Length: 88
Image 1 (cartoon, helix red, strand yellow):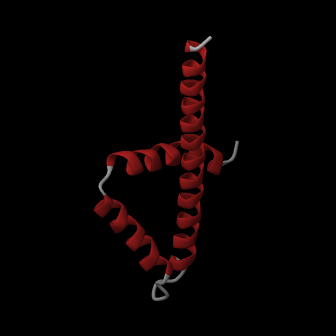
Image 2 (cartoon, one colour):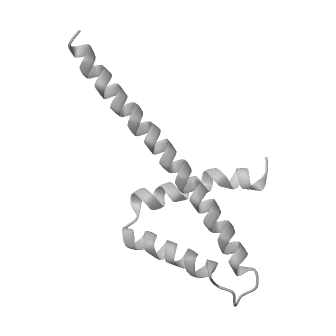
Image 3 (cartoon, one colour):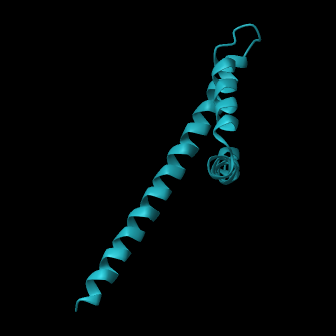
């Protein structure tokens, strides 16, 4: 197992907590910092590191979005099926 695969569950957990337990201002600060660091050319390799972090962060965001979407759609499906069964 690679290092990235070992880090992925931890990063997903951190991102999940950020989205569901943080304020909008906290997320705004995080994103502003990422953007500022991606534009930083004064420090060598800072831009590349920031791009790597931003890519990992976005992958985690997409994973969380997909999981939450599937959970939500399956809950809606279960609710509509249970309402349908009441009429049978």
